[in-house]
Length: 165
Image (cartoon, rainbow, N blue to C red; front, side):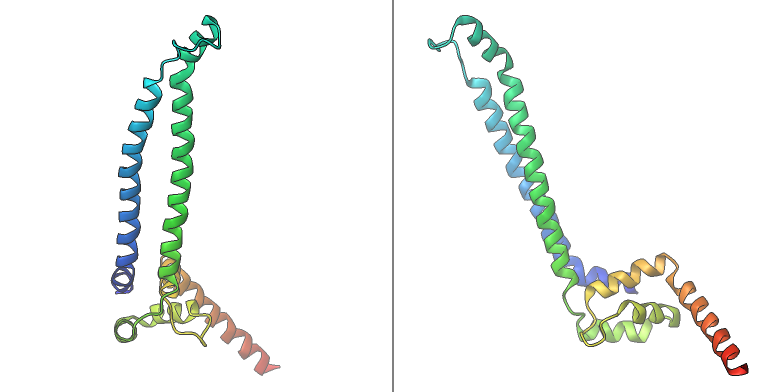
């Protein structure tokens, strides 16, 4: 249930992020081909300022230069796209959970899952956010419910020991 609600709450952000990645990839592919075609079209033979040896050297290493330019630009564009996707997804994590989804979760989650959700919702003076639900989902798969149960048992043992003293 928690995963379905999270999928519903984050679907728009994920679609926007995926569309951004696809759009950047398609546009960059077109620009990349034009840039490489431009680089391959440069002819240094008409250069009279340098000697024949320097012109031959430029002609020989020209494809490597343009390949390096394309590689560096690709890395920079990939990094900027990654930052934009992270920002989109981070903004989605900050959105409050709508009342209908909150009521659905409260009604249908098990006791252990609710315990983990209460544990994940650390700032109780703020509304429950999508990021809190994501944290609860991740912690459920990491075994947080069992650790919370074990901690409650140990707390009860210590309180009993204190009362006997």
